[in-house]
Length: 469
Ligand code: NAD
Image 1: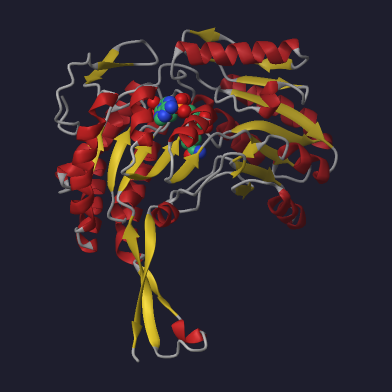
Image 2: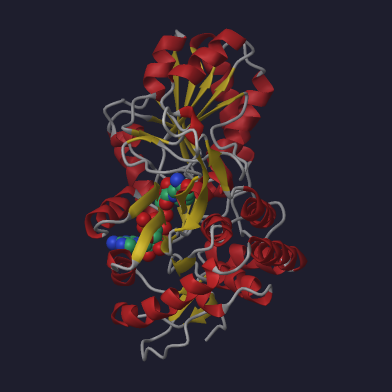
């Protein structure tokens, strides 16, 4: 049993973690059973008291010290991401750097955002009242995370929650629990009292119990739509934050910096083997440069190295499992049957699915509207910006979008009218830093991450008012 896990003996078979690339056993962790929810909550209730009583300087120093521990062990953290999630090593290193940054931002937030003066004297009759509001912890937060960024997405929940003085019941993806456990160990080594984060490892039944528990004040979830819908049905009266999927469009205008548009769209499409919620799924290219862009993009795609994720020159590692790769393959087969034309890729070896580019996708096809979460991208063409914006806005949910253009008016027109939580100008949809507000528009989007914004979601204002008589 890892030190970061619960000290409860479950009698359950441990959960084995296997490499998505070659099926090798990476590690084994004790499973937590949903019936242990009472013990989990008892720990978390103690944790909530301990956490709210940590002075802000102490919360900050724990987070800062944990960031330094992760920095010292960055190679081991990156290797764990490669082994349990199959992310290419160069990309795994970037995830570790982002996690360090997320923890540092959280340390700063712990000291910064404590409340505000309320202008009581702005109201007639309240001239002799004076006061302020503080930001108080919510109490116990259930945090549920997916497999694709197994370290930094966990840091995005733990950092702001701790900065705000909360306790966390953390359920990382059962496919990739090791990075999360290592991060919690770093926080404990940095001085965080044991009970403040309770790590529970398991799947759907455990997740349901953690969501439904009455003492939990907020569920902070990152994952797929179906799970988000299930959580919203079972949560009852508590705050929900939902970071769900995307189906990002990137618009490429005739007047763009061509090479930059090809390079940016390529990375945006295939980063993390396309298992990226803000990855480009639809690239919309203006008619005059469509053929030139298509040829350059396909040529660059076929040069990408799809291989062992531990190799330094691998661009595209495996998908999380063979089943996930088979699902991607089936979705592309359906699209081809519906009339799409395959330009490259669509080859599968076990969990490795080669970067795939399609064009001529009928917009009635599921792949056009739904998240594929795989190294699959569709090219389409348009004549006017109005048309492109309409196409970008087609799906019923959206996280980010991008536009490549040298025309400021077009860039701002698109930024204003695209319905998304972020519009990146002269970058692909997948540009993100950890300090910015992050979240979706339209169906299913609730709340924002990005350290300061998650901190605000994870704290509640309390007004204090003095009547001077
Ligand atoms: P998933 O929804 O299958 O699982 C996510 C987590 O939910 C896992 O820990 C899982 O065990 C848990 N879970 C499953 N059923 C549950 C239930 N009924 N109650 C409570 N918990 C339950 O997602 P995944 O396949 O791990 O991740 C891929 C998805 O995550 C994609 O849709 C992707 O777009 C999304 N994602 C979103 C963001 C974002 O910030 N918006 C970031 C990364 C990934």
